[in-house]
Image (cartoon, rainbow, N blue to C red):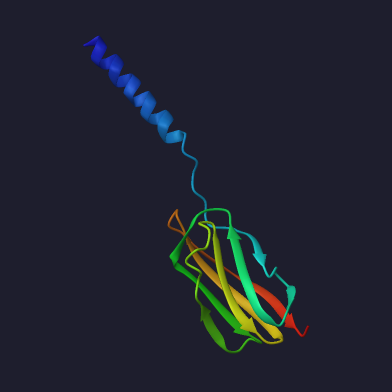
Length: 122
């Protein structure tokens, strides 16, 4: 009986330690973006790169672009984007834009935010 109890204790200790050894997943927090927040880029095809602190679910994430607080369009997310980044592109004219992002992190939580930026002539 002592052997069974001892083995059971060891099993429980190992299970507890194994559970604690995995870091907790965090919400997806914006680390960097291209263009940067309040940044300026020149007209033409703009490559958007939005990097987060954790893996995200690309299929359940969204990018919406609005110009001068008016017309909105949804951008297609590049399926080859890194696991912690959303990449897209659009050809833009001069104006004030806002890129609204919404991502689902692997922890199951949705986070969102805006990246305002300006497009100027060359």
